[in-house]
Length: 437
Image (cartoon, rainbow, N blue to C red; front, side, top):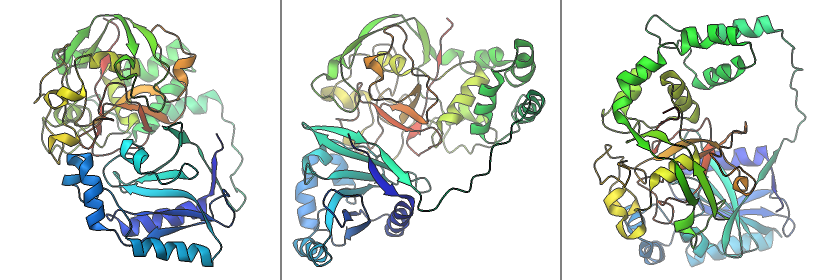
């Protein structure tokens, strides 16, 4: 699959214009002076045909009826205006784009059915976090959505300074400073991304030095903290085998095939998402709105450092999917999940709906959940069958479960999605697992 090559200056111009128009739904073309060439500019359809939009999009369910800014169809006059401009300037559309205000950068079944041409790729720009807009590109192959990588290039040469080599003593002193704590065991460094990388860097030292960096200070008393804070929230999941994506074999999406058997050891998982009340114990500066709401606006790094602090982990993708159980399906989704068909417009407190067969709540819907693994669409074609985890050091991290905005094709056990590790959003949280049981 050929990557999309686009200049950073064009992307920056694109984002600035979309932000200026936010929260209006925006639809348009990326254009080039040659057919199937690299994008050189973009053009926006200005006028939305409200009547046509309602007729088409309202048929796709409650989400589009509740959120009138979801979905856009250009008026006939606007379509003619754009076609005239392209003809006069001798330009060609090479890709389509549209924005999401609440949904991630997902190319769902609605996008697939309404995609105008198999010859044009499709970029989605999500503003579910206005300060961190996300861009992702797709194409359709044999009726299935396939993600295309975007290669960004700079028109000017880089002026990066050469890296300075440092000795182990300098690195140790820097890590010691980053991982310092107060008398309560609270970390003083506020950036959890920095803390996470410092913890990883400590693994390069001897056991004795690592102990002095972490176990004698930063992770000291983690076992006691877990017993006091989380032990009552944990549910043991017996080890066993299952077929990943078995129930969804007829509704495959990006990275969901082939169907494969996975074997897992026993583990314990929190019966609910981590709440604002619990997270406040870790981060005293976190502002609690409702103690029973799942904690959100949390990056993968935030969730990982929280887990280190309590001696637990994020669930692997397979642990999460296995824990989701087999009793959740489209026909009974409203019993278990807050999703697009629930007619709710805000995140709900945890444990309000029916628990699944393992005694877990909100495995689907309400908020997306970070997992431990890095994302690769073909990972399970070569991974181990027993307790597989993709621990590659790449920024794409798995999210599972969907949210209150997820349509039923997304809010299901087998659906795979990712965000970058430093991303955070109002509908993105996490739960934890304990592996040593």
